[in-house]
Image 1: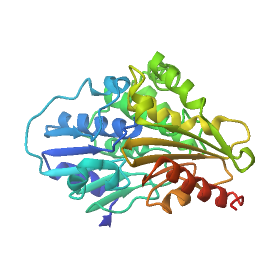
Image 2: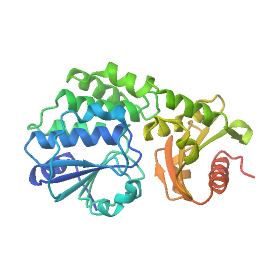
Image 3: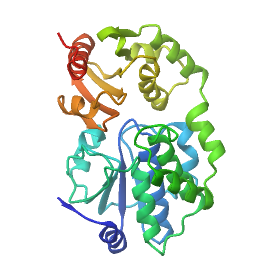
Length: 320
């Protein structure tokens, strides 16, 4: 692995072709926004490019694919966007291990790619993607590309509420608005709109919330049986639960435990300024950011909860 800069990354895109762009599992707005922006830009300049994700893309991200042409070819160049670790590619992990360029913003990036364009100080990988595509004068930032990049920035900054939001984050969002990003429907779809299924999911998950460390830690779990009992929900609805425990007054660390497969649980962590959850996640082979991170456990739900709660309590100075 070697770190590269924007100029080297741009030349890599110019000098290669037949691109496969990898997005991480449980896809969010940043990985999909980066993937569709890059794919659209590469197709625009005459390259063959297509996208791949180990999980279905949530319906609400469909607008970002409107300019993407379906192209059938054997890939020669593999790029990963917003993918900190090949483990996040699940069943596509073997393909991910052949990644020639990774474009990311996670401080926990495992440096698995041959080349790494990394900006851990950025709120979203989409900020870095915007810089990269803007540096390529042959690329036009279309309305669709602007929509994709704005989505990535807005979602990973929590609609500009998270502590990772910088003045640059706002500047780039403003520039993308000038370039045609249609922010009103995007913000409604990303932050306000909820299906009846999602509301039902939230209701059932919250009915089982558990508190530890005098209310400083809140835990909800989402089992496969719960998911199967509700019609009309997708991975994005499930992923959105991660933010809810931390919204409760007095909670410093919110934990959401989601059953991925029998015996496999994905844990999402969100925190206040009083805890670095990336350090907690790293204890269990995970990673992420200081205020938002995740890891996985191959064990029972009860054991996963016991281990992650103990680690969180220790980080808060409340472990016993």
